[in-house]
Amino acid sequence: MKKPDLLIPIAIWEFFTAFGALIAIAAISIFGFTGFLGNWDGWSYSGGRMWDFGSMPGVAIIFGLSVAIFVVFCVLVLAILSGIGILKGKEWGRVTAMVHSVISLFWFPVGTVIGVLSHI
Image (cartoon, rainbow, N blue to C red; front, side, top):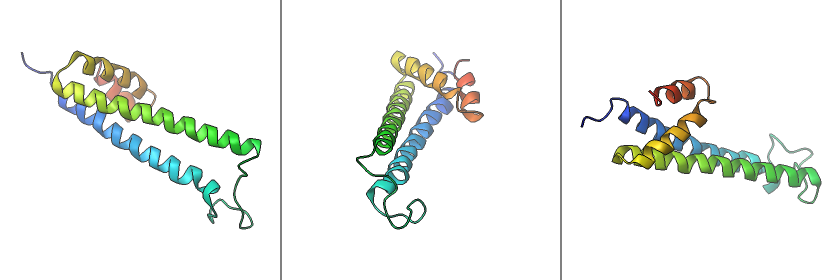
């Protein structure tokens, strides 16, 4: 049986998305938590820290950044599993790719096009 023509481009899209998620995790970690770790001229005020660890806004921001990293990490794992499963021709790879393509529909415009093409 011949493999579908869009199999390799979809697998490449999965790995490309995984790489983008890895960059997003690094960016959230570096730029999001920098205000807590020390002085950064772009965000600090009067040489102090941006937020205090004990304050409620500081706790909320740390929680929000942690949730964002967790969600992006889940997308990273989903994309890697989808790419591997698609290349190996496994049924679970197809299912995870469909789940990932539904998530990709919201990443306008490229994710929307890839999400639609992967359901064809």
